[in-house]
Amino acid sequence: MLKAIDKTRADGALRARLQQGPVWALGCMSGTSLDGVDAALIETDGDVIVGFGPTVFRPFSAAQRKTLRRALGKWQDAPEIPAAAQIVETVHHAAIAELMQTDPAPELLGFHGQTFAHDPRGRGTHQAGDGQALSQALNLPVVWDFRSADVGLGGEGAPLAPFFHHACARFIGADAPLVFLNLGGVGNVTWVDPRVARPDADGACLAFDTGPANAPLDDLMQARRDAARDEGGKLAASGVADDAMVDRFLTHPYFHRIPPKSLDRDDFPDLPGLVSDLSDADALRSLTACAAAAVARGLEHCPSPPTQVLVTGGGRHNQALMGELRARLSVPVRDIDATGLNGDMLEAQAFAYLAVRVARGMTTSAPGTTGVAAPVGGGQVSTPKAP
Image (cartoon, rainbow, N blue to C red; front, top):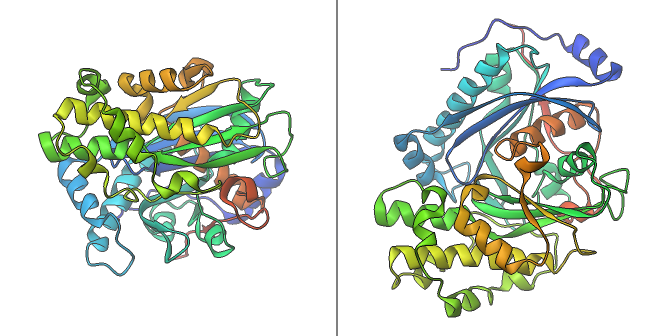
């Protein structure tokens, strides 16, 4: 059971604070890589980023990852979901509780939950984790279920970080179009023109999933070596990519779709079979080349050439993958940390930022980011109920 923290937040006081200016919000994220929970504090009014606060990472144990993996691709009614959802809520609670003891203390929480299935053109999208339960346990207003409203209005429901990327571009003083590339289990890009003032305005953002990124690499390591990942891409760096296999990969119908578009973690089920006859090193290098080739193919859709690509997420620690990107892209590829932003926490920070936007009735996605018909504000707000 989740244990309540003795720290109250009055709804009326929060509403007043939201009208007064920036607030400290806490965001948390557990991605498709299934490595753990990121949690981070930022100060924002939902438009401008004022500053960044403390962060924390809580890893999933090996046993927890196995339970979560069994729930991948499953919907709310599947028998694997309750145990997986309990892990999601418990580990999030532990990470959040740690940051609630810091100064500044958060006034609002953005809780994404764990994506187990994503089919926007079919059954919708499934992020496990109960925001109301967290709100009650933490005595804190919680914004959650960020994707359903967008999907319900015809959008892809993903990616959702682009509005935050737009704010980040302005925060670092960018003055020309650039790309944020997030390499989690799935890769996604946001093309941003920081000269456009509002992220939901025409020409401000274009965002979409590029293709598989860390997920097939991690899955191969788990299946062949019972390891969570290829640390730093060291094994992949010793291998040789099968170029013919990469070319076959790029014939997948997804790469012919015009963005915005999104993927589920397991939308490329044939990928392991394409490398089944290769050595571990060559298979990893080939999958790494596929991830980079998918990004290169995706950047062909940018409204104008970006001046740089800023890489965020766990994939930027994979030097084989970063090398493949630099070889295949014609613009500078940089670790986003070089700008002063935190590439390990950007997604968690994004949901803190989006939580403030939701609480203030602002938009969180637009036609250029998810393909939704018009700019929309997603998410629902849960507040602690009186005993």
